Length: 336
Image (spheres, rainbow, N blue to C red):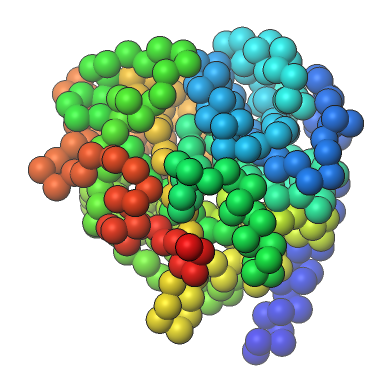
């Protein structure tokens, strides 16, 4: 059975690599600065649409961590995102008006660009509302983490997606371009999570948090997945299978210890819930370009109302990565 599964996954990886090769035709280079990438640069890959207010802080945050180049696909933005990104000296930008859904929600586009430009680099794949947090990130650059991973022969690094939200109404405080979104959305759920193992891909499947208890209370099994493998020492033969939830070869998904110990892991602070959320949810529901006929965004739109609050008496206010480690949401593992 294991031999048959391994064979199936090898065929699937080959199909997805060929699919990415075909989907490259949908991408138009808008500003290609990849010739400036040095051999040891850490890269960020992302797909976005209409995220102009978020971009200044998101770029600067990951620059401060040590990212040297951003490779971004803009999916038909109309809010000035393209124009802004074109002006950034460390951004290479591709544009497309093709279907996000038919590109497996952007995965095909990024698989191609990672194969073309990410080979041999540590690549961090994050959305513009995600902020990478790892052990010692307040005192050590991302290069220190990747050097330790290299020395330990570790090729991938897992992170839990942690939904952040404000206290009070989501739309009570307007977000200003360039502002740290965690200044507003600074609360999170410290518990309320379920974990299971995907036997085919070998990854953990995590669900829960404020979205599960607020938007998916009747069907918690349909709540969004919170498990991610965003940081990978990329090889042109790798491929993401479903967003950054899992990869092939399947060994890259073993970012946890199966024998009762702890592997080093991080967190992605997910700052979706700002005052722009309602408009975004209604827009994406109408476009129908997300997973399962945009079921997630339909659930958001159906439950959005003027006094919606995600905060509850069990909410925790975010302080730093050490707090997340104490709560068991991330770990330094053997990295000291």
